Length: 59
Image 1 (cartoon, rainbow, N blue to C red):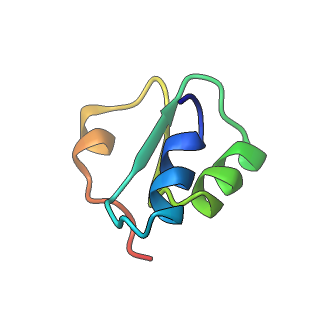
Image 2 (image 1 turned 30 degrees about the horizontal axis):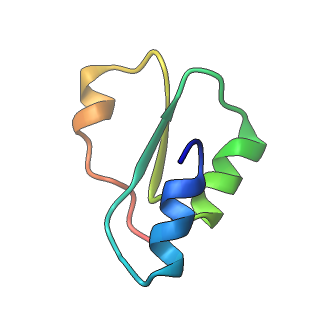
């Protein structure tokens, strides 16, 4: 699986885990797609250590 397929597949199966999508080439459309696929957060590279350790946003 690649891209947004894993969070979408997990969501379809009723599995609820916090998924953070990390990408080097993101835009608003991709961030929205990631959230709709079940991601709880979206981080664009390069990112700070603080961003990677911050708790995912509450849904």
